[in-house]
Image (cartoon, rainbow, N blue to C red; front, side, top):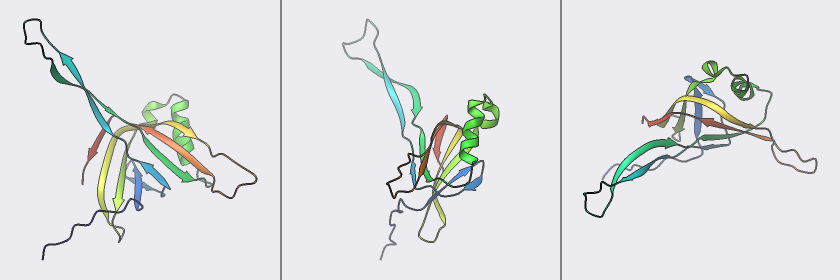
Length: 145
């Protein structure tokens, strides 16, 4: 009988910033990679256009986590606000874990930096967890495994 190759669940993952594992997040949106076609035609060609690949664009990574005493994500964003881009740029990886917690699927993002920090919304009559959001821009995305 053939070996089963079940897909991984979307609930076990971690984030690495410069190869250091960071605490878990309640949500992580892995961005898309798109490339718009450029339409081109010369005057002596048949009346159809050629489609040439344009620039590659990457969406941003979005992370959400319950707020704790840790200031790491806020301080990372603060480096950008203070104009210290050389210090803020990092290599980031999102790693999907299997049922036993072993790393399986891995996406790596180069030259990543936090473009947006959103503090939690608070409500005195609510019962929800206070969640902070971080949006991360990057310049390349590679699925390594």
